[in-house]
Length: 112
Image 1 (cartoon, rainbow, N blue to C red):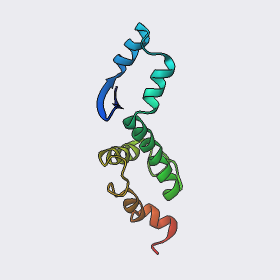
Image 2 (cartoon, one colour):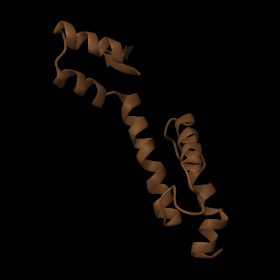
Image 3 (cartoon, rainbow, N blue to C red):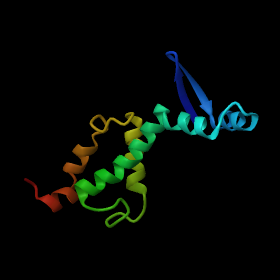
Image 4 (cartoon, rainbow, N blue to C red):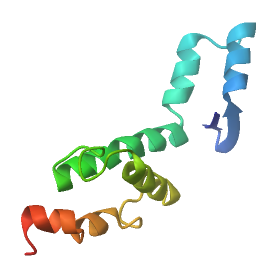
């Protein structure tokens, strides 16, 4: 796991090993490690993206990502990968557009 931390305008990568080593040698506490992870922009984006995909499926399709017609996380994984490729920008990833023109959406709400 890699984390990015910004200090004084400079960005540097932190690894889980660095944080664990800090815990072991006393230069980090559980609180400081948790705070560094929680405040990490990459972590925030990844967690936001992971929550957005099932919310989007639920809001637009009215179902969970693994409910019929899907039976596994293939669709969820596809959209999560696409959202991550566009740094969480669902407009550039064309997620909502794809859902709205989908046959599943049109069957639920009509072709309007």
